[in-house]
Length: 231
Image (cartoon, rainbow, N blue to C red; front, side, top):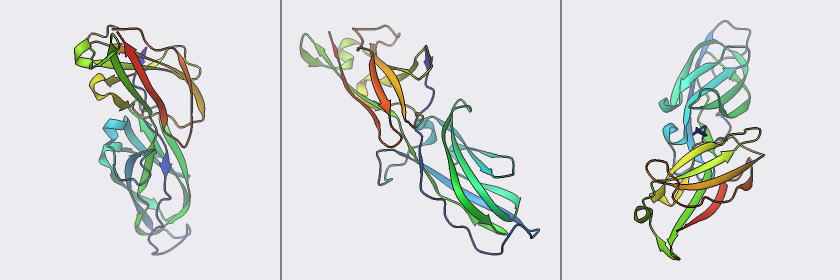
């Protein structure tokens, strides 16, 4: 198995209209673009609880103005500038990348915008990120008990992505009893999954769940429900 590949991935909200100071690709002035981004849970429709890049597994934000090389920014900066591009009209693509620097959690084409001489505010970009959510409960001889009582440290969630023979394993702290993984690609696609209860040395403590199927959507949280581990 290999470990956390990604968490979350959907961009919502149209990037703001730009400052109106001049026009057209025919002039020789340069423009600066300012972009700010935020990350929210897909289920957080009011955008009240922002996430950090670290806890969703996002490493970088890439902005491409059509016809120009891409600009790469550290996700953790939450804002940055594109400086000194020719004034003119561009199609803008914003992409959110996972820690691997290879997994695109989102690519989103923004409608054509005009950059005029001076500073143009093209934000904010609000990323609504999806994830696998899993809850769990533990019982001993039919009586509810705790992770500590059975020496459990982790719940390992194994996800078999389409075309992958080996699972991606997400480790969730057992004492949370309900947790979300790092970001996942938006759907639609089908996965298979299985959960295991582990001690601090990755030893399996009791029988894992059956291998289950789930269809990931592009618009709803990937909630896998609650699993039960019995001793």
